[in-house]
Image (cartoon, rainbow, N blue to C red; front, side, top):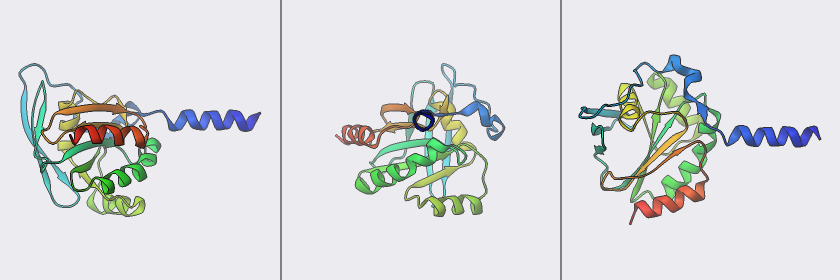
Length: 181
């Protein structure tokens, strides 16, 4: 009986998103949303030395996507569901590497050394962005209520879907295929 309860509790824990408010001290930028008419330009700095330039307004964002569909994954290193999805994101990145890219958007402060150690520990094969631009992106898409949150865009920067919590790899795969059309 206890094993069943423990099993059900662990399943419930895995399929929930982490509450962003529980680590509010990690968020250095206000989570106020862009209001009508607001426009902002910024860039995301990635661990591989690249920058993703973003133009955002209250209706949409545009970004340099190299002609690839893009999945922005908002996460933190302390979030267990975020960690659980890394192997699935690695598989999808590898499967669609010619026409799709995953960009992890770290929502906590971390220096380059610790970020590199984290990437190596979890064998992450996609880019991770870090810094203040991440918080601006979160605001630009309407705020982040919990993590992991993922936003899928086609190769024209058109939003395909927004996900909160753990999403099955098969569901992401179907939506990625749709984004690639």
